[in-house]
Length: 135
Length: 114
Image (cartoon, rainbow over all chains, first blue to last red; front, top):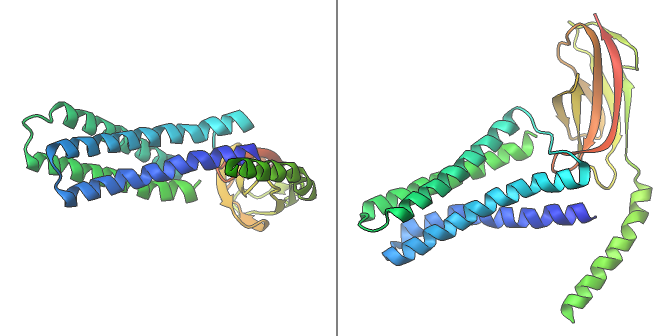
């Protein structure tokens, strides 16, 4: 069925995005990369958060296209969805701010950015479980 | 060549899908309460149902007066309704897909709550 294929392709992007928003900050914290490599890794996480937002919206778009309505979620699931969106927006904002202030930034501040990104990714992934099963 | 084989296999599966779908026509049947029944708002009523989700469906959502009140993953059984406000109420069971989107297969009954 075409809608299942569409959902599956979007889920593919969403799953790999989830891996990146947690895996890259965890790697960066351990690797202690150069400033240039650090900046490239930050943009990779930024792209992953953007992919999360786009694919999340994609689920809604596929539902609208095939059934004329958005997923029917309530209560805990809505809270979890808002939390995921907040994490994505915060992650992108932090990456943009860190990129703008990269020059002259200390190593300690860089590690703090990675820690916050790791917390945001972990929180979003945890929220995803509640969104999945409380819907 | 490899991609062409995959495309051919996908096309073949696509063509076979309607045959499976016909065998698994989706439905929802609410056995209790019957349409037009009168319920005591203070007594927890039971919604007895049976569902075949069909090829597009996955599980069901229960609605009272348009508000979702429960998620059922068993395809046959009962759901205990909470306290209901007095007056006419519409109870619905809707089949939804894995993304929680109602696929258009549902049954609703109207009850009087006293």
